[in-house]
Image 1: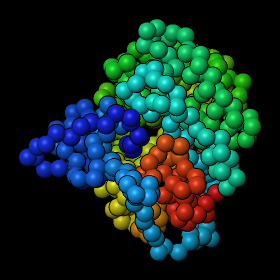
Image 2 (image 1 turned 30 degrees about the horizontal axis):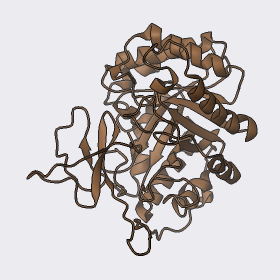
Image 3 (image 1 turned 135 degrees about the vertical axis):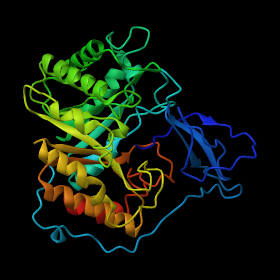
Length: 396
């Protein structure tokens, strides 16, 4: 689970109920708590399941300066030499968030409701040695509800998405994962028809079947359905991708409970996903992991300096027991000494395990506010100055 910047702010009504602290949840499906945010923040819709109290950026009346939140770290630079017997990731990079923004605006307008990654951002990370970019998009913009998920693609949105994928893979020579960032929802309802979902993926994979550097990420964080249904939909997608003629590319499948590594066993995912079948034997289990108290990625305080490795331990053991490969598609944490140590510990444990083939940080993207603590968008995202060089670069 993580957050992304919605473009519809909810007006917080005056209420005697307790207010929610900044970065806390203030709404969403099945949420029953307070919808009133502390002063200085506003309740913002991030997706159907999660509204969050985001800080309000203020502009000085006289100077026009912007007030932002900054953090510092006293942690010493990490060194890969302190992580012995490790195997480097095959894929290492960041999420390039933006095309899934503005959930209340469908199809929306490019540049107003959503955006695509900046080439300069991709250049920056490739220059650092990263070779992977996860590219979230919204299904309803690609396959309009008027014709359904099996219908024709919206030409403009597909063209922009394809241009982004081609810039990453052809121009820069890196890998790009196509990520329908829909939580297994389409047009406001849970996806349940495996035949339709398989057709969607047959059609989409067919657009990129000749590009060996494209990776297919079946669905971001399925929710609100049984684990068995999520598995069946993922298996149908794998079948559809291979039927399209895309036989060489990696496929990433995701489970319930925000596909969390720390809940992979308790959520029921472990009971069904071990049976995933791919005729080309090139599928990995994608999990996500955040290091705050509830694993939501909404608080910059990490539970402890060792929480990263601890929250991955059970999932790592399950991957080994089932002879499967893992991919940590999202990880994020605050820019402070404890979190930097925790992230470094997580990456070290993953590279020592032999079962994790990749990782991508949440998140880059040109529209993140200056106060978003996991933003790694260059040049001034809060994760760029310290977390990037201290916790990520040593593991390239």
